[in-house]
Image (cartoon, rainbow over all chains, first blue to last red):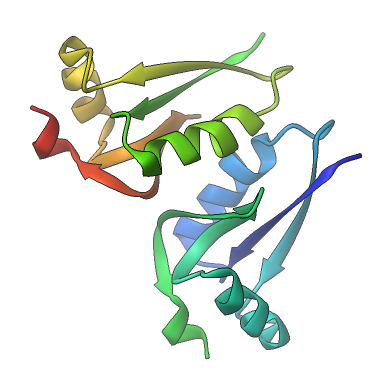
Length: 78
Length: 78
């Protein structure tokens, strides 16, 4: 049974670096990684905010929110 | 050939959460993850600063620095 991990981003350079490195480095045997572009899919903003995301890029996994560097504040994506 | 990833922390709760979740989730088939406690091993501070780390926890991999949330500033560890 794999655990779901969701990587939220907004297409910014900081986001792309985090996606290509950290998100892609997660163990595929243990994690199903979903990539969500909040700039293109505003319907996911509520989920992201409910999870506690304050900025992107961020990874939500195992019940925690892990903001990775700083690309853009969530306020800028509304 | 595995890639080396170095996870720098200082034993703080934010650090522990990031280590147990993100650092431990990296694919062991592709990454050798070294865990460095900067509070206990001051000799590694120079490496961390040279890599561009400004706060812990942080992951250095594939030539990039990925600060994960914010536990402590590097200045507080000198």
